[in-house]
Image (tube, rainbow, N blue to C red; front, side, top):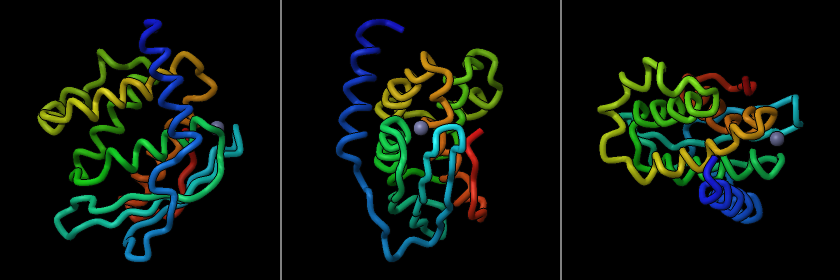
Length: 162
Ligand code: ZN
């Protein structure tokens, strides 16, 4: 990783880890799921308020975990707001592909290309978050909130980071 990106990664993770955004339980949430990462002990609940057309109107979370899991959840809730369900899933697919190094060959990334058009700011934040790939044991921490978000969209109530 370039030094610049590493610095940015540490700065952003520290900031969101210390001052998580959207750390709350919205009373009007209509989707929720609990996620845990047994490797680290991270435990999060993700709340979504979704419109009938699948637009994410609100996203929030509660729980406890290491700085990376909390920072990732915090960034995710900011990123998700206003996105369609398909965009949210495509952003996670991108994060997952970058973290696991499947970036170039990930077929989903290509399939998602149109969905991600115009989301440059969000993709930049995904790239920052994906800096966690330098620390492979923490990838599950960084993806926990995202696994939990897709579980909530799927109507499941429990997710485990894999
Ligand atoms: Zn963790």
